[in-house]
Length: 72
Image (cartoon, rainbow, N blue to C red; front, side):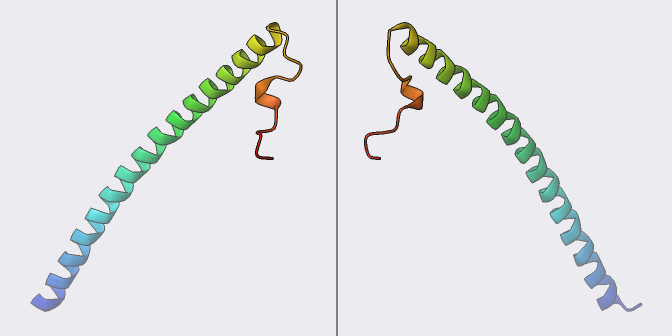
């Protein structure tokens, strides 16, 4: 194999190593974001339930979370 081909293979191997690392980094970011989204979704659901209970206790006919916004 000539030096030009070896240099090209080395460049390709370096590019592949960089892409592999970038893919691993992005995968870690996605996993963290997924966990954060799951946690935040649970919190929003808890807050919506608490707000609905609070409104129900205050004597509201339809909980605010179940009402249509005024622009509908």
